[in-house]
Amino acid sequence: MPDLSHSPFPCVRQVARAAPKNARTFAAVAEASYPAHVLGAPAPVVSTTSSGLKIGSVSYPGETATVTAWVDAGSRYETPQTNGVAHLMETAALQAKSAEIAALGGQVTGYTSREHIVFEAKVLKENVAAATSLMGGLLTTVGDVAAAKGSIECALAGAAQAPEEVIMEHLHDAAYLDSRMGMSVLGTAETVGSLQADDVTAYMAQNVTAGRTTITAAGAVDPAAFSAAAEAALGSLPATTGAVEAVMEPAAFTGSDVRMRLDSIPAAHVAFGFQTEGYGSKYAVPLMMMETLLGEFDPSSGAIAMNNKTSKLSIDLGDQGAATAFKVFNLTYKDTGLFGAYLSCPDNKCEDAMWYTLHNMVRLAHKTTDGEVEFAKTALKAKLVAQQGTNSGVAGDLAGSLSNYGRAVSLAETFARIDSVSAADIRETAFKFINDQDHALAGVGQIFELPDYNWIRRRSYWLRY
Image (cartoon, rainbow, N blue to C red; front, side, top):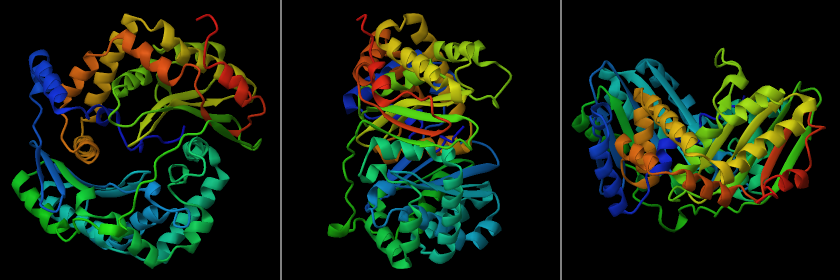
């Protein structure tokens, strides 16, 4: 299955934005409702410098720590001519600092999404200061652009040979036609080939500012020492770039599809999604629960057969042999979102796979039960706890919360928001975003039996209601 783990907004980050009064209300409910292992989680230490740099840390005993830096910039801040420059910046910076990374030890990685550039270092506790300094170097260094272009061009060539691996990129292209939101994070062979060091420098000047940067750490960290190290490492970032600062183009969703029939690929790969809303939407938590209710199945993940899983969608797809793998996704951005499913299915089962998937999605608008909702609450809470079971998960969650919402969100508050959702809320959410709505779709492989757009569109609603 495609790697969806770099979806920029893991679930817990999608529930935080609310009016301050509402946030206090949920916090108060949580204070009275949850056990010590939730309420007793270490509290983050958060500060903001005069230039706008956000710094946060969570400290607990151990021998290791994770330091991560997020910049509120990504491919949607690029132009059609400079598409791929954010990822080029990230790749060149990592290559330029390869000697420091090797000396540091641990693991240093980076990735670019549509709205963020992210660097992360997993290190021993004695190397936290050095890792923090490295974050500053990665965000202020223009590396060897020519060498980085070579690496990216190889990746683009590989994607061209295996388009099923980048099917979510094709889905965004279909969903946000002719807009920056729909551009590939990697760029294209043509745009990457034309980029120069001056383009990377200009992009950094327009986007890498203190006010759009967040640095966090979790694990064996001294908060005061980390804050001082972060200010020293990133204190040179400008507070703003003024008139030249890049402006985010609003996302405009279009119902459409893109299809690439390639019989050389031994399966059909289909991703389709409906438009939702951004971080601050009141529907954010119900969408998370809908994702949990519909579920996922990866044949490499365990011995439980698809039709023995708990979701009705999994049972239907498994009983009918309609798919070999599937994953329901819920992607949230600043001003839009995509809720849908990825399906890998035999070439002669495309129609069955789409029918059962759409049937189960639309069913949520009419027949979601209280029992299903209670199960989804428990499953979602377990998922969120697991996500925060590592230094990386805690640091990443804190960075995402500070970057996207401007404040830290406790696990207890998140739990309270989940517990406030009812079956009626799920039905309302599914009715708003799925029932009788346009979709975007990307299909790759042996898709000769994949139904056309109108067939799929017709099955986004039930005539019985």
